[in-house]
Length: 194
Ligand SMILES: C[S@@+](CC[C@H](N)C(=O)[O-])C[C@H]1O[C@@H](n2cnc3c(N)ncnc32)[C@H](O)[C@@H]1O
Image (cartoon, rainbow, N blue to C red; front, side, top):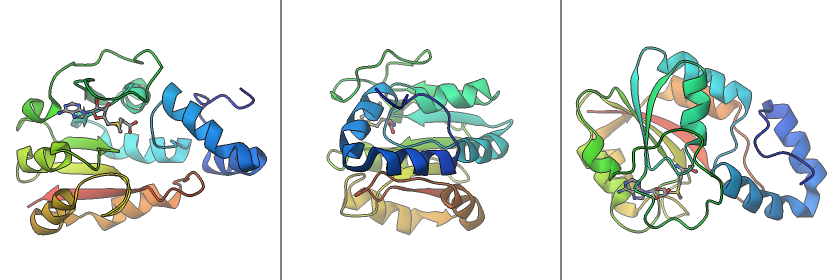
């Protein structure tokens, strides 16, 4: 592969890679996901996450390969990656860190300050169940697409609208340096449960 998917790049470097890939970007996306996970993770985004998550107890619900959790752990963040790994056929990589192989919904407790939910399926009840299992005052960091697209169910987005409040500054800071694959419309949103 011409560009290593696991190399940590700045926002500008990722944009340059995507331009250089041209029409091969979809093949690269497939290989990137298999090797790491769904979101591109520019170093500025990782820094914003690390600064805001310092000293917090975090659970990465449905963590896939654990790539994001591992990158945050390397920056001293206390993240527990959880994935029941029963249904996903995307990932070819070995896990990057020790993953708790359980239903993530049942692992969410009052001990957690933050729940990361990155690219939950648009089918099944997982995304809604995570919302419902969260306690008032807990933060959700959502990474995915908008209602009606590739991630999260309609019920999940309705629950976010009804029971959560958007943390706009944190959301904007993450999206400021976010990079999307061509044709995909994922973004970051940070919410507090009411
Ligand atoms: C589309 S993948 C996203 C993986 C990763 N968060 C990312 O962004 O690359 C969805 C993940 O959710 C996991 N998952 C689905 N339901 C789950 C559950 N109840 N408990 C834990 N993990 C679950 C799947 O095994 C899969 O790895």
